[in-house]
Image (tube, rainbow, N blue to C red):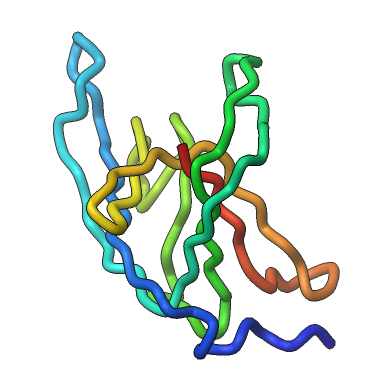
Length: 123
């Protein structure tokens, strides 16, 4: 079994901002903020392909451990994903005086059924 990421390595906290329901001009009408605790955010230079097929460079990666990070019921989302029964327009992370946009969500499994942690790519 893979050990969970130790809390002493999960030294950061951040705010996850999910924007919902765009108006006829495509602007979000409401948002939901969730405080993330016991996470880790590391700078990144990794290149990924976004939903438009364009290559973008990540600015950071957020590590969220399924046992030691909180809240345990957090949902990371990309554009048009469903969060709490509503369609997300955009998801952002506020950390260290910067606002990042969620670009990729990668669940990493401990075994074939259980997610060990998430690596969330931020631009």
